[in-house]
Amino acid sequence: MISKIKNSLKALTENKGETKYILFGGKGGVGKTTMSAATGIYLAEQGYKVCIVSTDPAHSLRDIFEQEFSHEPTKVKGYDNLYVVEIDPEKAMEEYKEKLKAQIEENPLLGEMLEEQLEIASLSPGTDESAAFDTFLKYMESNEFDYIIFDTAPTGHTLRFLSMPEVMDKYLTRMIKLKKQISGFMKMFKKFLPFSSSDNDIDYDKMLKELEEMKKRIEKAKKILSDPEKTSFRLVVIPEEMSILESERAMKALQKYNINVDAVIVNQLIPENVSCEFCRARRELQLKRLEMIKEKFGDKVIAYVPLLKKEAKGIETLKEISKILYG
Image 1 (tube, one colour):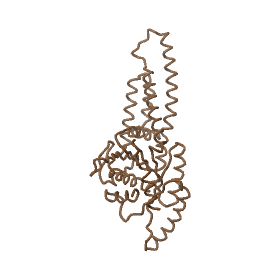
Image 2 (image 1 turned 45 degrees about the vertical axis):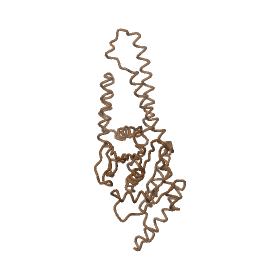
Image 3 (image 1 turned 135 degrees about the vertical axis):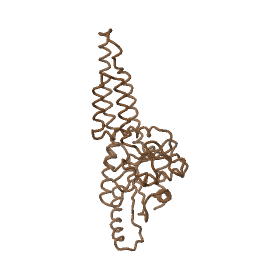
Image 4 (image 1 turned 30 degrees about the horizontal axis):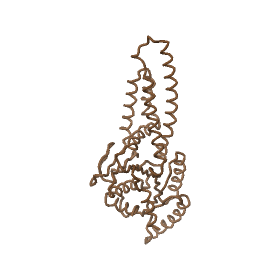
């Protein structure tokens, strides 16, 4: 049975010629970063070009790989085909602000509205997710890698993050409709004012084209995230009730965005042959929770990772975990 589970998870990971996206989610502290890193190691060892992107502001990949990373792809030591990106919220916000500034310069008559948007950009809740999602889109559109693995933040943050395509799509649809109305009105108005100075004209056609291009990017991201052939979302849980229930809620929330969870990784299982009374008692409790996991996630691939004697960090330890996961 264990062999079948490993092979099943391995089968979910197969690349069919296009970039494949693997997202790991779950409650804080369950081992998402460990599973992301171990999967990256496994795929790099198979000869694939892999990039692990951290959307978690805590950025634990640097601790697990024991090296520093940045907002740009950085090679993992010892590998020419494994890279890590840590999305820097401040850097992403700066890039977001630069885009708004460029719009202000191109559209002076809308400057006041855009400046207000710029002012609230660093204050309003959710704007950091918007800025980070812009970076996320960049990697989702990249054909540079065979696999892109997303090490996500704890559940609540991730759900807000993954709701961005839906939110932004609705916003852009409204904006495009408004711009079309304004553009039509201005073209009609200019017929009555042929003497108006073109220097102060706003290029509504250009603005509309930019909005439509952005909408296409969002639609593409939605399509990729909802395509089980291209995207695999894996929940990492520990055999404790709070972790299981939170992951069940996350799975239902993801379904609303047409993002399908195809695997559950149960981490930190106490080994069978333990001698101490405390460990045996904890294992008995974990076995009950495993039944709960099978009941709630029985139609998913379920993989099991034992509690390690050492910290889950360093290349050699990650290789051990990758063998447990993928054989």
